[in-house]
Length: 190
Ligand SMILES: [Mg+2]
Image (cartoon, rainbow, N blue to C red; front, side, top):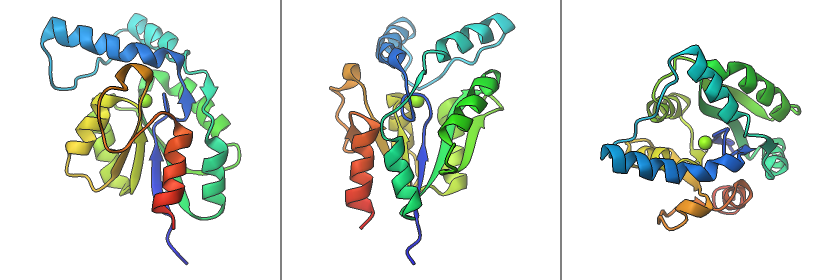
């Protein structure tokens, strides 16, 4: 029997539909203009009040994305092994746990990891993808996609983009999770 493809999924913006994520490119541009910052750096909440704000922002991840049934099919037919890798910080553990229970109601995810040591998200993901030896990883954040794509990882990085950063060209770009899964099904699983 063929070995299932190891596919990792980001949580916010990939498995969870997050209407607020379209504001990210605006924030990023502002940050770059103000700080002339090129390398990706992500803010880590430091105080209880900042952590509270962080939790509020993540409350906007409210819906499970269309595509979860397709993941289920691919797992049940043995074509993929699905894992969740999210860079959510320790202060979001409560909300993260709730979502994992909801998403994993049919035991489709083999494993699930979050960023409990509050590492920089791109560094955490690079480390996890290498450790888990993932064949494919589906991510929505362009800074993270470009960082992982340029790293020495063997993992194929599929980018789920949003309306505002649609103009960026990238070979593995999809407008939603469903489209990315269609390609996984057609191209990779033969
Ligand atoms: Mg994301």
